[in-house]
Image (tube, rainbow, N blue to C red; front, top):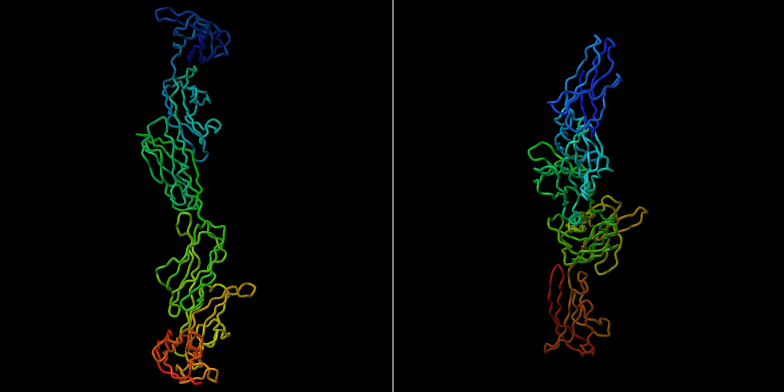
Length: 552
C-alpha cells in the first residue's frame, strides 16, 4: 500500500492512501502510526475498521511536522501486517508563480490570461484573483486546473480601466502559494481632441496605457481596413512610447486598431482592446452644374450655373481657360449655395477664341474634391463662303439642337435660319450686310427649351462705300447732312462741323447727321462749312475731310 498525501488543517490530520489488494480477505483494520521527532518511536494515532475508506483522519496533539505511515492488519497468514512507506505532513506551499501575460482576445474582445505550469508535482490548480486598486485587496474569481483562462466582460471590461489580474498555485493539500504581482493589459483609445480635424489632416491619433507586468520592448500597431478587408501592421513604437499617428489612406472607410505589446527578451505578447474609427468622406453637392455659357456681345460671355444646398462643399469657384489650354483662371468664389449664378466674363476675344468654364468645389479643408462638367463657348467663324462652328459639347448627353439665326446689320431683330446639328453653313449671297449667330438649345424631358447658348456674331459686308453729300437744305428735302454706309453701325462714326476760323459748331454721330444748327440750337446762315468724319470699325479706321454747302 502507499500513502498519497498527509495534510494538516489546523490540528486535524487527513492521510490519504491507496489500500493494498486483499486476495485472502484477511484485512481487519487500518492503523495510522506517527512521531513528531525522528528520535522518538512511532506511536499508534488511530485505527479504522472501515475497510472501504482510503482516508484516515485524527487530531494531533501539536502542529509539528509529523512523520507517518499506515499498516494493514493482517496479511494472508492472519498474523503479519502490511506497512506503507513513511511520509511527512505536507505543509509546504507551491512556489511563487508569475503569469505570462493578460491580453484581449481579438475575436471575442474578452480578457484572457496564460501562465506556465507549476514545477511542483502535487500542484492541483490555480487561483485567479482580481486586484482592487482602491483597496489593494485580491478578490478570488475562480479556480482552474488549466494553464489559460477566458474571463467574462462582467469580471474584466476591456473598454474600461483597472483590469488588474493576479494568481497563485495551490497543491493537493490546498496549500496556496504566494499571490503574484498583478498584470494589467493595454487600454487603447483615441485622442479625440486631435482627431476632430481628421478629414483635413488625414491623421488619427492613438494613445494607450502601458502594459503592467513585464517590460515592453516595442509596440506593434495593427490596423484593419474595411475597404480592403485586411489586417496589416502599420508601424511600431518603442516600449516607452504610448502614442501613434495613423495616416488615413482613404476617407470613407472604417479603421479598426489593436496594439500589441512585445515582452522584452521573449516571444510573449499582449493585445489591447479593439477600437474602431469610421472616417467620413466629403459628400458631393446635390447639384453641381453649369447651365450654359453664352456670348452676350463682342468680348463678353455670360455663365449661368447653380449650386444646391445639402453638400459638404464650403466654397465654389468659377474658372475659365482658353479651349484645351492648361491654365485655369479663377473668376469668382461663392461661399453659400445659390440657385442661379450669372457671371459676365468680359474683355475676351470671342470672335477668334473658344473659352471653357467649370466650377470646382472646395471642402472645409480648402481642397478641391469635386467639379462640374466643362462647358465650351460656341465660336462662329467665316471662311470665304462658309460659316462653321463647334457644337455645344457639354450637352452631348442630353437632347439639344443648333440653329443659325440672321439679321440685317443695321437691325436688332434676329430671324430664325437653318436648324439642325450640323456645323457648317454655305452662304449663297455675300453681297448683303447680314449678321449671323449660332444658337444652341437644350431640350428638357417635356420637349421645351430649358437653356439657350449663343455664339459670337459674324457680319458680312456689302460694298464698303461711304456716301457723303456735298450740300443740304435744312427743312428741305435733304434736311440732314449725314453719311450713308450699310457697313457702319451706330456709334462707329463721329461728324464735326467747323466755321471758317476753325471753331467747332457741331459734333455727333455721322449716321444721324447735322441739321444746320450750332451748339446753341440756333440755325446757321447759308454758306460753306468745313467738316471731319472719323470712322472707327473693327475692320478699319478712316478720317474723311471736306466742305458742305448749307443752302437756304
